[in-house]
Image (tube, rainbow, N blue to C red; front, side):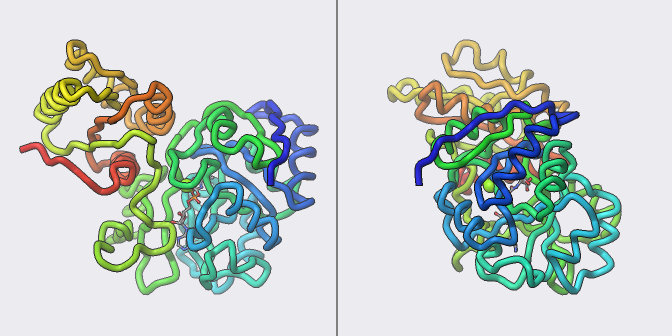
Length: 352
Ligand code: TXA
Ligand code: MG
């Protein structure tokens, strides 16, 4: 259903009460509000209202088998959205909430099944962005919110990205400036026999390992080569329009390989873009490629924060192919690799 999408500026650290009140009102009457979180922009609706939740799926063109995270503003709300909550949930919440961690728990009665793709579980997160917290509090409701992008596109890290994807499909966008982490939350499943990291994200695996020794990282898509991927774990995700080619291996060799790959593309008449660390840039000078700089390779926070915006900017410049490399598996490197791998639809060129 087409509608007018309004854009409201908000102060990201001290959100104006009037803007928050207006947005909360839209949520309460079943509408859709995009809002900033510290990870990416979310597309929010009343998580207790099946119709409102259905509206999220429609606006994003998201398949019904891809479950949505429920956002809360205080720990008391946890028992309103989940049940049979294990002690480990509280231990993790104490360390990482508010923040970029999502816990998969047993779904509470107030939460409709469609938010969880019909499953008996629910993913819950307490974001730490002041605008997100103020909105949830003012609405007086848990807010269901996936990333505020069209399905399978790179996540939105600015209000402009949200507008580019969802203008005319949602009621309101709260513009609180760029998201600082830029990569979605880490998702941990606490409903099985052992805790599982389903999606690496803003909380690095090492930080979780310190609290949950031996925690297993199991992004489902990696193992599901034959069977259909688990809900929300489809490999095609976070994709730019251009096809993305991902390189892995020793950094210097990888960069050299990317440079010659770019030359070959040009000879074939294809326009290449590169997701490059600042340190990579000089090597591409003579290759006539479109560079999108991610920041220093020594600063994974910056690389992560720029990743989706850089994919979108290369798309806008109309390149046919995007070349990218990973930044290791340590810290945020694991999440950055996961997003690149999905954008590359699982294909990696291993440089020997
Ligand atoms: O940082 C984030 O998590 C952002 C901000 C807006 O909070 N949200 C976000 O939502 O990334 P989304 O919908 O793009 O990704 C949520 C993922 C789903 O794709 C799915 O893999 C997982 O969380 N998820 C949600 N509910 C689940 C459930 N009940 N069981 C297993 N996984 C679930
Ligand atoms: Mg998403």
